[in-house]
Length: 412
Image (cartoon, rainbow, N blue to C red; front, side):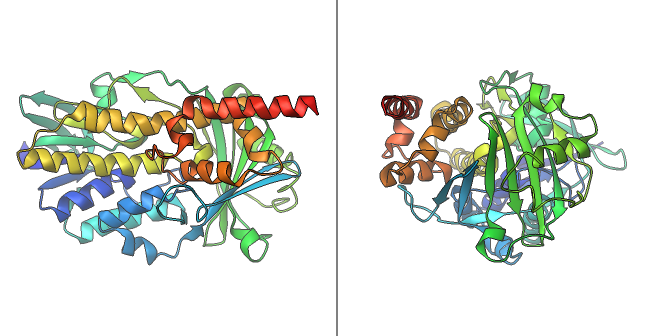
């Protein structure tokens, strides 16, 4: 059996794995990336947020992405009947990027993966991890390539960026129930033949059909648009068993988008993902970290998934390099506690979205510009900026403000 030795084994060539690989390669670590799929491959998570742009830049991947001319995303729009709330990323509390992209993930992820290959990173596609054993300061990972050949990869560190494959959580039995309500989603792409001209045609929107049921509309620069519905699993499962009929019936409930997508066929049969929220008992351990969806996934409503993926991938790479250079790293504090802080902020916003409290703040009129700027910073991914009271006091500020606004409305 073939054997190979590296400093870092990265499992998965999605955004998290590529950001980690790009940064480690820039800093002369020996790395190996194994990816179970053949790229390009379909994956969901098509709306990015500005915080992740910093990671592509730092990993040396930003220019390759800019060349693709993906649809630029300058904010996000939330619709509830005739009420509209538009967030502009250039008008936010925290410093940072004021735009990002809306992307077909097959193209986006393939661009990242091919760029790290071009830079000289060793990437093996169609290679599956069969087993991992940790022995002292090293790990030994058994992998199988597309031809059935086995190989043992010895590494000082593993970054598990396997996404929904959740390789190490499965092997090490780290799965834990999520604190987020059980939701499911159904989605497809269309050729957006009725897309309006100008800015309206490019806006990403979240159309609230019921407090806990909403429709996403994400236009791409290639003329296609992603449409999906999210709601409680019981709601999604109550729709027609014919997924095409089910998604079309939901679009019909949208006053804002019904006409735009009337009679437009899906480019593929809608995909359905049930009870997608997940968690783990630990984010790291001796010789490994879990990044992105291999650790936590909350909900697609605020597009936080790719941001957490790149944040955790970049942080894993930086902390390992420090350790490789002889520094003492407190992984629990510098990795787990740090990542949990950001996840907990977004988890609060997701929960308060589904209680309706956050929607109360979004659609209250007249708008409070200061509150809106602070919430906008969170939606842009700056969930570690504790100068922002909507980050620092996330666990009660939304609920308390919604309570006050609802009392005022009742009094009126």
